[in-house]
Every structure is written in C-alpha cells, then in structure tokens.
Amino acid sequence: MNTEQVLQAIRQGDAVRNENLSGLDFSAADLSGADLAGSNLSGCNLRDAKLVDANLSGCDLSKADLRGADLTRANLFRADLTGARLRRANLTASIRTEAKIKKWGLKGAYIAGPTAYVE
Image (tube, helix red, strand yellow):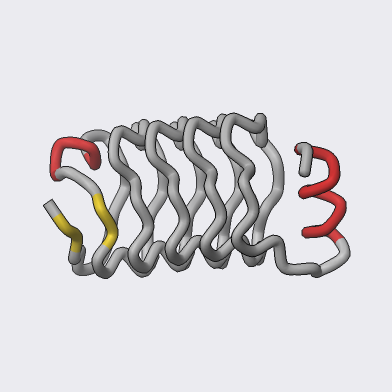
C-alpha cells in the first residue's frame, strides 16, 4: 500500500492491519482512530501527525519520526519505538504497556500518567 491508499482506507473506516508501510510519509496527516495494529511503520515520517485514539498495538515504529505527533489515547501496547524520535510528541493517556522504548527516547515528549515500558 502507498500513503494515499492508507489514508483513503482510514477515511473509509477500514482497518489497515499487519501491512508493511515502512518508510511512508504521513507527515501532518490525520490518522485519528486508525486501526494499524501489527503494521510495520518503521522509518515512517509521522511528524506532526494526528494519531488520537489510534490502535498501534504491536506496530513496529522503530526509527519513525514522531516529532510533534499527537498520540493522545493511542494504543501502543507492545509497540516497538526503538530509536523513534518523540520530541514534542503528546503521549497523554496513551497505553504504553510493554512498549519497547528507552527512557531517553522519551526526552522532550509530553507524557501524563503511568508509563510501563520495556528497557
């Protein structure tokens, strides 16, 4: 799938699960409520993207650019955020249980609530 196909599916309310979307550009896109569970989003440009209430459980977000992204209430259960850029990202009320992320990777991110992550 390419960027436009993914955005069209999300606008139609379709789930885009277990897809290889690595390296795609979703900068400033509205992906609110998207169901992307299990998808490979490694290296994606998600800078300033709106991912409010998105299901990103089990996603590979390694080395993704999430600077300024709004991940409010996003489900990041068991997501891999190794090497992701999170400065100015809003992770308020997001589910981060068992997410793979280093403490230093959260530097500059806005987080409220408990954080459970894997070192």
